[in-house]
Structure formats: C-alpha cells, structure tokens
Length: 196
Image (cartoon, rainbow, N blue to C red; front, top):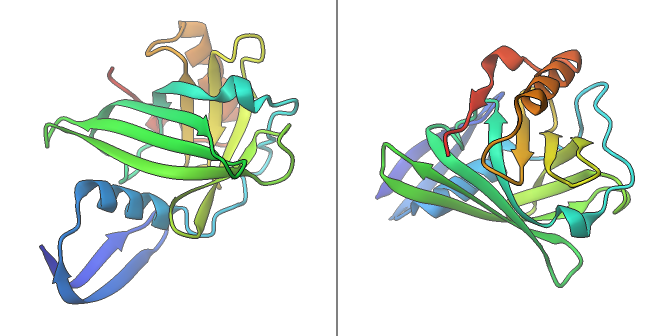
C-alpha cells in the first residue's frame, strides 16, 4: 500500500506526487510509471548521434536481447532483459520489455508503444510506457545485413543499449559498440553487461 507523499527519483530531477487516498501499485504499474516519467518530454538525441537511414521496421520487429546498458533505476538489478516489438493497428509499434529481478525472484514487464518521429526509413522513434509521455529511441548503428545487433541511445548520453537477436554476441561486436559509443561521448566504463 502507498499513501501520503511519494518521491520518484528521475535521472536529472526529482518528481513528486501527492496521493490523497491509499491504493495498491503493482510492480508492473510501478515499472511502467518509472520508465514513462524518466523519459518525460525527452525527444532529443545526444550530440553527434545520427539515426540510421534505410531502416526497415519489418526486419526490426521481433525479440531482442539486451546485451549491455548504462544503469537506470527502472532496470536496476534486472537480468535476462529482452524487448519484443510488433506492429500496432494504428501503424505504431508495440513494445514489451521484460527482465528478471533476482532480489525479488520474479519477472518484471513494461508494455509500451513507439512511433517514428520523422520517417519510417529512419531509426528515430519516440517510445512511451506511460500515457502521453514519450522519450527518444535512436538506433545509431545496426547490422543491416542480418539485423543481428543494434546500438541504441535515448535522449542524452545517459541512456545507451546494445541489443542483439541472441543472448550473446561476438567479442568484436562488443568492442565496436564500446569504441563507437565512447567516441560519441557515452561513458562506456559504466556499462553493465546483462546476465542471460
């Protein structure tokens, strides 16, 4: 049960909510709220990050495994993290993120939606896990031959992911990800490599 004054820590600021009545927040709801609030109004992208061109959404759909990420409260402590993308009837993309919390010994899941910001042939989308609040999802490198891996950023250099179609990737992919991301200003020394 949650009542009274609740503070949710965002990346750069504190967001405060006052609850007048007691109510239950499920883990799934909390996970979605935190993700949505962290991306509140964040549709920019880091300096020098450029979305891939000739992006093919049909090839990007399906399941992706999170190989590495920068730390965030909404993913902290999660292993076996994956994202599944499918088409929505309104032309957008459905997003289902899952991860296993070892401390709580249970799966956490967040469902969201994504839409292209400019052109469907550009890897620049806005994603929402909570109401009308969207954040950037920028694919800045992609294995265009097989769509086997993707380098993804959020609105600033605090958000970074290496995604792949398999739970592991070749060491040269990890090295390329680290090198390319460091060149763009991401702190690759703080990368977390996800257990699967």
